[in-house]
Amino acid sequence: MFCINFSASVRLSMALLPLLAACAASPKPPVCAAPPTVAVPQVAAAAVTFSVSKWEMLPDWQTLDLRHSWAAFSQSCHALGHRPEWRAVCARARALQTPDNDALRSFFEEAFTPYQVFNPDGTAQGLITGYYEPRLSGSRVKTARFKYPLYAAPDDLLTIDLSEVYPQLKNLRLRGRIEGKRIVPYYSRADLAAGQGSLRELFWVENEVDLFFLQIQGSGRIELPDGRQVKVGYADQNGRPYVSIGRKLIETGELNADQASMQGIRRWAAQNPAKLSALLAQNPSFVFFRELPENLSAPLGALGVPLTEQYSIAIDPASIPLGVPVFLSTTYPATAEPLNRLMLAQDTGGAIRGAVRADFFWGFGDQAGDKAGRMKQRGQMWVLFPRGMEPALN
Image (tube, rainbow, N blue to C red; front, top):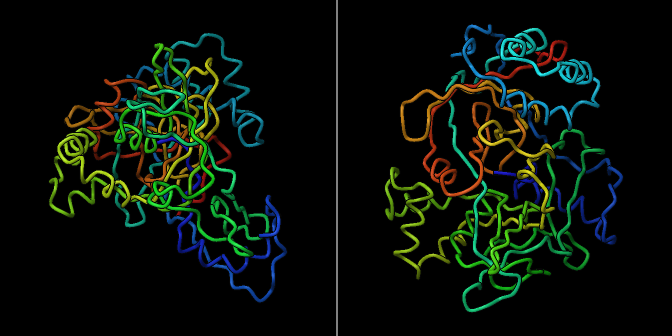
């Protein structure tokens, strides 16, 4: 899942509305002065535990092929290399000339320290899911075949950032709209389906379920009637919380837990078209898109660099710093076959919350989608911190 420093809770949004109302007069709300009488919600930092580890504790570390990991790491340096804490390690990486696998392993061992990630309850295992870049059939105009709209970010959607005044709200971006002299939460998925909001269609697609899953993935390609493909990526989100429709189908007895994969939800939708709109409306979160340059090699993650197929992951940035190498030890989708790999934390996701939690980017197309849709594995994670940037141990 792409994008994603956008999931501030509606409860927090509502708590801040009296404060934000003072900004409503401007279409680009300025940061308001902090009234001394306003009680600001305290946002506690994620209780993540990092424990210093050893390289030999990382499964298969000595035999891994690190070349693809190196390509992904180079992308992270494009985004982080100007930062003081990353400047030296990225400069050292650029100085390596066509390194072989042994040189790459030596580089990581000398430049980084591995820290295992633990959940707040002390457990080391967490959920590892998958995502991908889907292909949809669509058109730039509405037709009898292409009737489901893909929307651009609306003009009446506001983004409110209070971190300069309230540092404890860092990473929280509130979404809202102006109603009279108040800022209120932006329209929900059901509201938008009913035609509310200043909406502008980018494309029209053939399948409503495919469009829904495109919003979850955050990026994809639209195949036009002439055979050309255009790329679309995350532009913004309505600020509403993400609710899993798979979980809703389990709760109502429509599917059991083993059936509630992406493939299982597609089958249910094909068999229950009359129930589909009501089901989708139960997830109030809604993603808006933008058309991407044709020459973009891969989807852009939250770090702002192209993702590397099978070597980029989405993480919770409140737990793990965006851009760092992460050693992931899990299993292939729906199997017990080990999948041990050095990944790069280059994306975030609305449903990716917690310490030992990651979303594995499988790439583009149907095969990638099959793997992503079936991936619901247990796994462990180690963050590689540049020497001198190690975390304080909890």
